[in-house]
Every structure is written in C-alpha cells, then in structure tokens.
Amino acid sequence: MAQTDGPEAEPGAPARTATAPALPATSYGALLDVIRSRPGLTRGQLLAATGMSRTTLFARLEVLFRAGYVYQDGSAPAGSGDERRPGRRSELLRWDTRDKVALVLDLGQTRARVCMTSVGGQVLRVREVSADIHINPGEYLATIFDIADVLVRAGTDETLVGVAVGIPAPINPLTGGLGATTSMMAPWERYPLLDVLRERWHVPAVIENDARAFALGEASVLGPGRAVLAIKYATGIGAGIVDAGHVLEGADGAAGDIGHVRISDDGPLCTCGRHGCLASWASGQALIRDLQGTGVRNLWDIVDRVSAGDPLVCDAVDEAAARLSRVLSTVVAAANPDALVLGGVLGRMPRVVSTVEEHIREDVAERARHRLRVSAAHLGADGGVIGLSRKLVDLVYAPTAIDRAILGEHESAAGQA
Ligand SMILES: [Zn+2]
Image (cartoon, protein in one colour):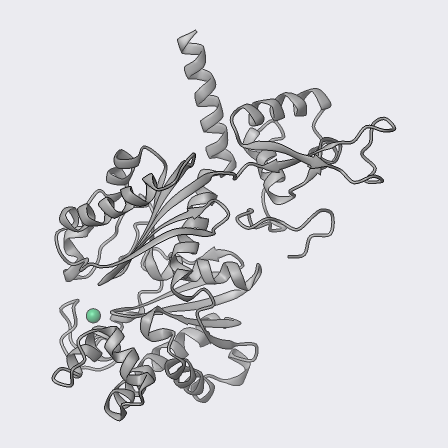
C-alpha cells in the first residue's frame, strides 16, 4: 500500500482513495477513520493530521477511549519529533480490534461455511456443512443458526460487532435485502433476512451476493487499485467485479449474475425455467446431471475423478470450462481486469484455470488482456468469508455509524440521568 506518511495500514483498515470526501473535523467517526488508516500515530501527529484544536481532539479521543474504539499502545521511538518535553515519551494510538469478532455465514447452494472472524479479517473458527439452500428459508436457517450459536458461544471475552451473510441471490440495492431471484430461490425473495439476523443477534447485519463477496475477499489480497473479475464456479456460476476497492452492484443488484445468460436457443432446462443458460450447460449441477450413472454424485466426486485423470469426467469438465470461457471472454473485454480469479470447488481446479486461461487468450484481443493474470483463488475456500467480514467491518466502523453509536449512547445516558 502506498503510504508515505505513516506506518502500514492494518488488515481491515479502510481503503484510502484520493477522492474520499473530507468529513467534518468534529466527527468522532472521521477521527477514528484517521486512526484506523494510520495506526500508531501519537497525539501530536494526530493534531497535525486532523487540524483539530488540542482541546477538541483530546475531548474526542477521551470519548473514543471510553467507548472502546481506541487504545494506547507502547510509545513513540525517540526522535519521532513528538516529544513535548525531554524525557517524556508519547503514547501511540490504535484502533481497538482486540477481542472483537464478526459472525460470517457464507451460504452456497449446497454447502455453507459458518465462521467467526476477527475484525481484521482473520478466520478464527469455522464449520462447513452440507445444506440445500432451496428448501424453506426458515428451516434452512434454523440449522445454520444453531451451528452459528455454538461458534459464537465458543469464544471467551469476545464482543460480537455484527453478522454478515453471503447468499447466491441478487441483493436489492435500495433496501440491502434480497432481490428478485431464480425460481428455485423464490422463497427467499420476500424473506426478511436482515431483520431476522438483527433480531437474532442484536448487532448490525449486512448481506451480499456470494460471488461478489468472494470478489471482495480476493481483491483484498491483491491490493488496492486493482480491477478484479472473480468467478465462483461450484453448483452454480456467479461473478463479481471489484474496481479500486468498489464492487459493482448494478441497477437491480444483480451485477455478475452471468450463470443465466442464454448461450443457445435450445439446450437443457435451467433452474430459472428457461432453456440454454450458461448454468444449464456448464454449472456443477449440470455436470452432475450429465455424469449421472458414472458414480459422480457431487462436486467433490468430480474433483476426485479429475485428479485421478478419469477421461470421461476430464472431457466433461473441459467442455464446461470452454463454455464458461466464452461468456467470460465478453466480460473480460468489457471490464478489462488485471486479475481473473477462479474460485468455488470447480473453479479452483488447476485444469479449469488452465482451460479458461487458454480460451481467454484465444478469444480476447491482446489489448483487452495485456495485463490480465488468470489464477485460482488465493484464499482457498475463505475468499467469500473474508470479503463478507470486510464489508461488515466497513459498515460497522463507517464514520456515520460511529457517530450514531456514540451520540445515541450520549442521548440515552442523558435520558437516564
Ligand atoms: Zn437460467
């Protein structure tokens, strides 16, 4: 990260952009934002960085200390220019992420990862379960929530800051809730998932499309300023595009829903009710259907057979990856990313990565893929979880959210007095 005037940002620190609007200097949240972005500042350096008066800054800091957002850690090295008096050392200020955790539920069509992460995005505890998301949402979530409760209770002296859920469905950009989806996911469309999450754990909640969450996680390891096209290729097919830290959501919250692009006039019946969608030809579900009678029952069977070099399964996977590549070529040409990351149980297979790379090289003009690197997911199966954790932390620690939390506490304290 290009930071010339302070230490490296910690994991989970807000992405800095040159165009970020200036927040009012009186904002608690804006002050915390500076401390998050530049960990280890002294009070003197913070005075210079914010331009606040000494009295205002110290009063604001006191409130942030009491609310548990900031702590003092160690002291500035000699000669840092912040010693007020000879022999006196200055305390360093840090964003307090100690013992603060997030609950993250990364829900796929047939498998779910239930995790506790640190606020810095480190996976602390994880359980992976097989669960079919197409059943009734209440019934499905009862199972997932029970597992989540066990993981939450397994922590000692932890504070849960929020809950984030990734789901293979569009997200309504106006409400942040679930958007219109395929017929198989229809029961979820009117399901008040955000309200259910808030009522269950009494903390802020956020939901995101699973492929876009995966894209956010992968973009976080690739570094700021990158254009990343990330594909989740498992039971279904979804894409996420992150450009300079911003994930494309689209007018209907359905950006990246490439699985239901029709690639032929006829062809197999798709879960969306139409014929010839990419997913109906090339998804994991389609492969399992086509390999019926060969002993392939699930995605892991496909991975095992490909590893063993089974020619029938290898051919089927090559053909599916070729069809996927046709659609990806158009997306690559439209977005001109510098990273194409393949994730999901099928997408991470080296055979799929090399097939996609080969087809993109053949199909896309050199000028639209000059910098492009095609790779398997860098975070393994954790990309979605890390993306969701980061999205949640950005929501919980947004300057406006911090101001609301602090001023709300003040008001309720005043009301009780
Ligand atoms: Zn479809």
